[in-house]
Image (cartoon, rainbow, N blue to C red; front, side, top):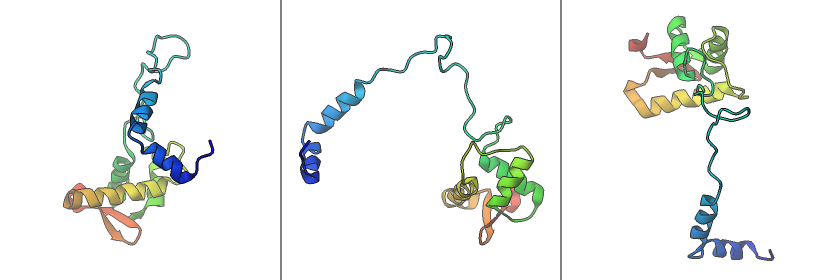
Length: 132
């Protein structure tokens, strides 16, 4: 288009640029209803990614495994135990242990004393005494 990066940035920040982008976004066709025809989407509610048939989330499955083990565990050990016991399996992610670690630390940070988990030692988590 012959514009430099700074010219492009100025054009995008022009008064009417945001409205034009919103109009273009709103012009997309609406998703089609499920008509029951072959290939149609929708209808049945699918479980969340990563949930087992019984509906356990990754964190709920980790709580169950930790309660059964009564010992602090690494996230890799938790993932392996959850899969072996059929509580939860990864929906195809390459680093489910990293995702679990992140989710556990997020719960500890957000809920504080109300969290189900606590760090026992570096890289190992255990249940808070009341959750056993």
